[in-house]
Length: 249
Image (cartoon, rainbow, N blue to C red; front, side, top):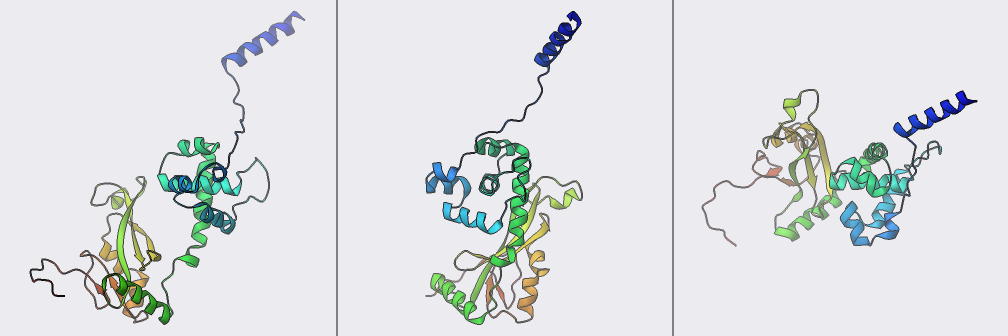
């Protein structure tokens, strides 16, 4: 009997020194019910109606309830907060009452699901009437005729990759992807190319893109506007350099 008591005391002593990790389920509040629409917009870059649209469209619900998976709304909010702020996973986790690993899984699941719907929302208009409408919208802005889009590249900062690390260092000295985007007169993206490392110049990305081939074949009737980083083409207008003549109205 004394031996059993001695063992129990020893076990309690060890547990006090080395407490076992216990799984804690935190309260997952719904920010859409506690924040104002403008606060939600500042935190997630979307209004509540758009967030609910994404939740219904992406269908992030798990097939089973094993391991208490995150509700689709919380997964969407965690992913949007991370993408909108670029903060550490631990900050997003603490804000939504979830673990860091849950944030990591939510971001991957959300982005994979969004990519599946890319062609449903990002596409260059093929219908002639739509192109004419876009040209009219651009003309109403600045009086420039026949414009169907504006093109430019932007550097998206990334962590240094393990392979071909030098290729991803851009001219500003950090690792990035150089993403080419074309938008219409309403600031809606109609074409995206996101596969080139940061050291690649904008002009090469456009030269190798599928949208450039469509312009070359004459499938698109109109002009693109770009900055001086692009070569001037019959379908791509760039600014004049060092102009000294007066403007005539």
